[in-house]
Length: 358
Ligand SMILES: *Cc1c(COP(=O)(O)O)cnc(C)c1O
Image (cartoon, rainbow, N blue to C red; front, side, top):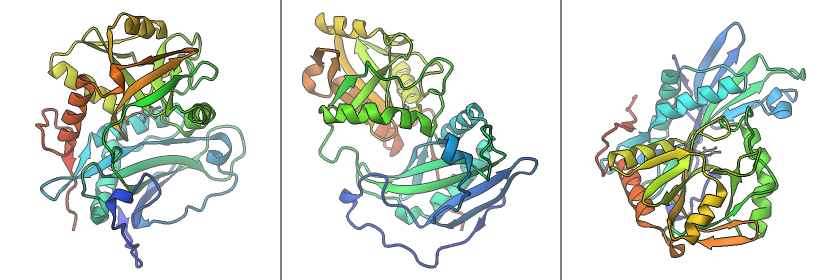
């Protein structure tokens, strides 16, 4: 790609206190953008100062939710370089989501180059303190004036970056989860496998009602029978039962998490038995009653690992591992964050270093 670069004339003030970064409200000086027109393909890739988008009010993204996104992180490494974790897998998943929502694919190497060039230019925004990172949000939307209820013919792919604080400023604390029994996030044949905005819109009401009841997240069951455990809002779920790592098998209702895949690989590397299968919610409660449910945790880019201390289903509540992080979750957290910071051997070459372009 021939990316043109327009640097900002008015650099923003960088946050000084990295302990107050929070998540997703501060953005770097620049963004990447490339446009698509049917018959012409992708054109005019450019890095420009961070700014508002101007799109037609009849853009399909605004009316029909034709949108997909990714979430990834860049890390400041001990040697002063910036590392990206499995970023080509994010690019591949972006394309899978795009195909599901009738949007064009953008070559994985083109996405990789765009992200590297952008992060290189804004590398001084990558925070350095423990647990912090530069969150990356590649996004694709359908634009153009077209209220007809069919796929658009023009699209925008862009990437924005947001320095984000440590997910666990006060140490890892287990969360309380409510198993959702009234709403559904995804159904067979639907869009659950795609990282698309509509799945999030579908989940906010349940999440808010759970929050009002003192829970941090909801755990979704399959949309048809509400019988099998699927995933949490933005995390896949894993359980340790009888010393085995158990997680829901992928299908078209579950987002194929890159953290999920990494943990399963690490488990296989370490000789921990792995089961990817249907998990009846009743099995969890039975295993707990028999003392066989050892741990539960979520996996996702934001938290990496989020231990679950309390699980409620209908009128039953169970406490898992004394409401403390368990040894398996702790081991995966240490290994994966260690690889991301290149302090632990990266046997699968998951981390790439952002080149210096100028
Ligand atoms: C992004 C996401 C995940 C986690 O995926 P990672 O690649 O591990 O960050 C899980 N579930 C849903 C619904 C998601 O959108």
